[in-house]
Amino acid sequence: MNLKYFIFLLICISSFAQNSEFPTAKVDSIVNRIQLPVFPAYQINIAKLGAKGDSVTNNKAAFDKAMALCKKNNGGTIIVPKGIYKINGPIHFVSNVNLKIEKGAKIKFSDNPQDYLPLVLTSWEGTILYNYSPLIYAYECNNIAITGEGTIDGEGGKTWKTFKAKEAKGKDLSREMNHNNAALQDRNFGEGYFLRPQMIQFFKCKNILVENIRIENSPFWCLHLLKSESITVRGISYKSLNYNNDGIDPEYAKDVLIENVTFDNGDDNVAIKAGRDHEGRANSATPSQNIVIRNCNFKGLHGVVLGSEMSAGIQNVYVENCKTVGYLKRGIYIKTNADRGGFIKNIFVRNIQLDEVEDCLYMTANYHGEGSGYQSDISNIHFSNITCNKASESGIVIQGFPEKKIRNISLKNIEIKSAKNAISNENAENVLMTDVFIGKRATVPSAAK
Picture 1 (tube, rainbow, N blue to C red):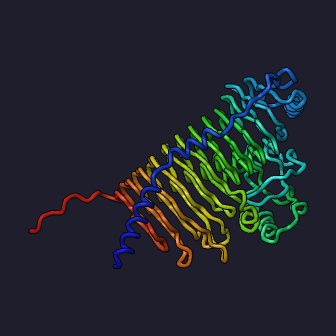
Picture 2: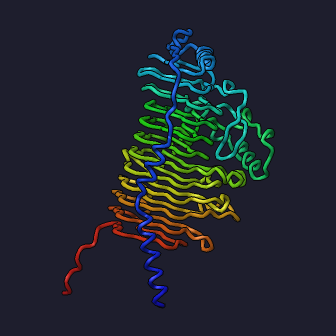
């Protein structure tokens, strides 16, 4: 080997190793610039507007009136006292409002799809369209919050659950419209298409706080952070086990802090997304970026997922100090395919404790083997201080394409005590492993006999 080339190679490897260190200063910078919402002193208790927490009365009018009063007063706090408050239809936020659900209080939404008409501008699996209103919906609002120690129940396990088996027509049409760049005004779904609404969606919002509440029984994704920024989600808990009950979905989102969350979901705990296919690539100026996930307890299908709808790109994601409290299929899951394009880069994961999983760390550019022509760029992915008791399938999986390799992967201080398959590594380059143990650690070699 040429001496100059060898020295250059050593410098590159040394630089990559240094760059793989968890960037605490960048995390601090993101967290410090996220702004918490600020509210006027005005407060209104919904009981004073005639709301009844008897689990039977429809309190839609009282909640609408409370929101209108807040708008008249340039914002305020809506207090929901102890009781079970049935609402036949959505809550639509205005700016500068804190919906405070007190301990012992529950908001229970109806499951009649007619209650969530007329259609609103929303998104469904990465495509912008008109559909049923999310149960709690904020569009182009600033300084908004859902707080308190109460519960939001989406009643998703009955009527909404039946939509899953009937959604193919609507799903396929939405993707066709995405690929054909159909005019937004023609993307009308709702009745007859069976696309379930999200439980909570913040769309084009800024300075958001979701704190300490409990989320149960969502029709679809639980908390969707769409084209929004400066977001804090902390101290919330879940028990939402219906189809596609992702816990938190940041999509085209930036400057997000997710911390001290206790998940128990029927799908991904956190799924970072950035639009689907042609529409996503057309929005490449607004990738999902600057997302911090820390001190969370995972339980459900997957812990942290990047993709598969990520066509505008995902970058600068920092996950640390998380653990499982029950089953996960996969711990950290990076997934995309040749329909998506875009990129996933600058991802840092450290101090993760996993119990029993199917796969511990999984990175694939060929999710479901779908698509062609738009292979994604996956690079600069760094894992450190990861422990896992058992992987019933694979410890570490890396799957790129021959012509588009996954690049610059560092694995440091990884211990998976048991795995059916240790490592599957194909079409990747510059994979650096330091102190990686899968199965029983080797000791000093035995002496010859």
